[in-house]
Image (cartoon, rainbow, N blue to C red; front, side, top):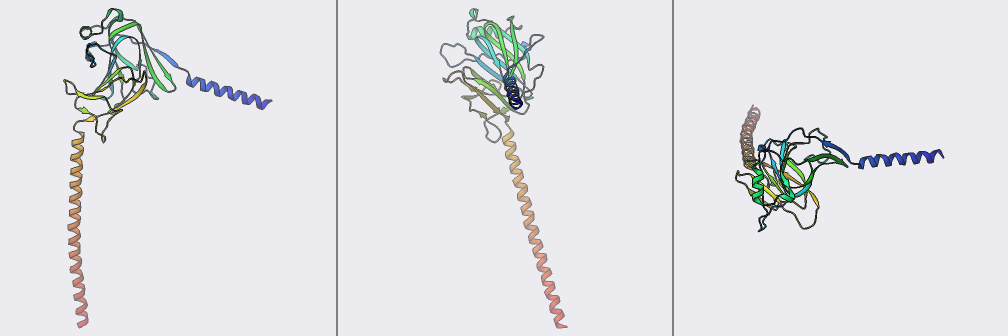
Length: 287
């Protein structure tokens, strides 16, 4: 009877541990003051539709210092966003996972989603007064930040996230939205030796500042999610690498040439020593 009680107790304990591991650990994120509007680029990205409407789009601006990434959303009739920080797997629970939060939006039922409306919103200097809540939860080791707005809105939402600082950026893409990644000036991706984007982007272009811009478009498979990883490097890296290889090969060539010449000299000296030994032997025989 005691053995059965122990088994039941162990099973209950395992169930509690398993359940606690699967439970959502939620906490509210409090932002003390509005973010700085002027620190972001509010670019009006349009898809290729003929009616010039805008679709839900997320643009990641990777900064040259590699430690932060600026995110700008174009939202159309949206009341909730799921934000996945770059450290989505096993990430630390820092106090401020999201920084410099800015919203330039209007109620969806009063705001028409066209370029003219977004141009007006992008020229605003103060953030919009729309109530929202931010909560962070960790589900089975995966971190997600939920932004819930009081009502559906249309416009821009921007914020800043911490990044790894390793010229590598990973994020989760929702299959129902356009996603853009703007690399820092002087950086590119696409070389299989130095770094590529996985999966392959739908298009690669350059903006007015000469920054390489990657685009992933929604597919027709539904609201699926996938992880996208971008490894990037300086434009001069392949050239410098090739130059280093040439210098290395040149150095190896010099070493081999020096070795060949030294070997010939040693063989010549050895030949002279052998002749001297033969001569001494002959002299001894004559005596």
